[in-house]
Structure formats: structure tokens, C-alpha cells
Image 1 (cartoon, rainbow, N blue to C red):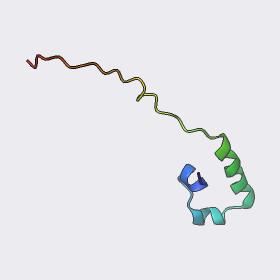
Image 2: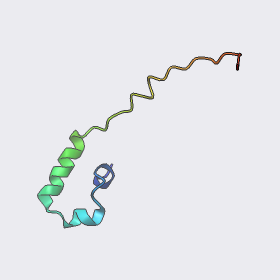
Image 3: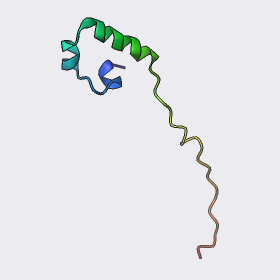
Image 4: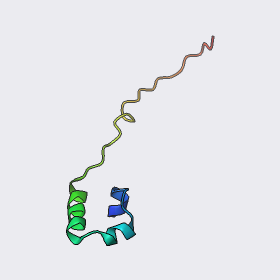
Length: 54
């Protein structure tokens, strides 16, 4: 995973213009950042449909 994939505000060219210590901070934050998982997909309850349409 690259920095540009995780932090959408940066492009490879903009990262080259940043100071080295700022880029190192981003790399450190990359390891601690955890994306949120979608729990909504796990809670879907499906049941068979009935035969009466009306």
C-alpha cells in the first residue's frame, strides 16, 4: 500500500515537494491507520420469499 493510496490528498509529485520529516510522519501514520470495515454487510438477514404475490 502506498502513501498516495491511503492518503488521497497526496500525489507522487506533491510528496516529492514535502519535507522529509513530514513524509516520515506519514509513513509512521500509515502503519497505525486502520480502515473501518463495513459491518452492514455482515448483518443482512435473508429469508425465502412467500408464494402469494397479492
